[in-house]
Each structure stands twice: as C-alpha cells, then as structure tokens.
Length: 130
Image 1 (cartoon, one colour):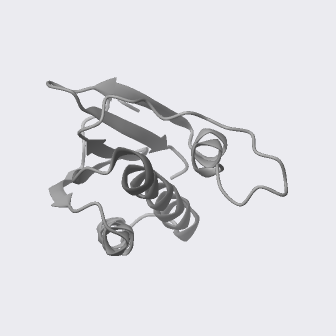
Image 2: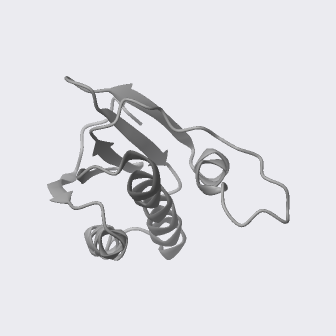
C-alpha cells in the first residue's frame, strides 16, 4: 500500500501534549475517513488514540497527525519530537496500562517508526481492509 498514490490526504495538524488532543485527533481522523467501511474507521480511531496517548504519556511534546487514503487502504502518521521508539509490551492481565502498541501491532496490517530530521520520530500504521 505504501507505493500507492493517495486519493486524498489529511494535511498535518499540530496538537499539544494534552488529553483533549487525543479526542481531537480521533474525531479529525474519523471525519477524514467518511468513505471507508465503519470497521476500518473504528480501528483507525482506536489506533490513533493509542498513538497520541503514547505521545502525551511518554514523549511530552507537541505532535502532528496526518493521513493518506489510497484506493486500497489508509496510512496514518503521528509525529513527535522524541527520539525514543515505541515499545510493544505484553502486560499481565492485572496491569492497567501498556497495551497501546500491542493493539497497534495486532490490529494494523502494517506499522513502523521512522526517525525524523532533528530528534523526533514518526509512528505510522496502515489498514488495508477496504
């Protein structure tokens, strides 16, 4: 899917490292994905919530959200100013946190991290179930 040309793109928007930004990002992405199946929209919303929550909890920096819609799928990117890559944890059932990247790794068709100029990174995921 990465080589496919985007049908349309959600331009990057910058958000502050605060809890309200998670909801704003989720709604922005859901609105952008108006023409994809509900299952894809809901999974994308869940995964972007996990990525943006990780920025707030771990990076503590402003972040951006962007997305591309291609004929066969969706690519979503969250970029922040921390060089630390995300970690997929496998918490015990009794642990209250630590499942965000596990959800991304299990529900996305593909995902990864790219270093950005300076000290930041972009975490992305793709959903190809259109």
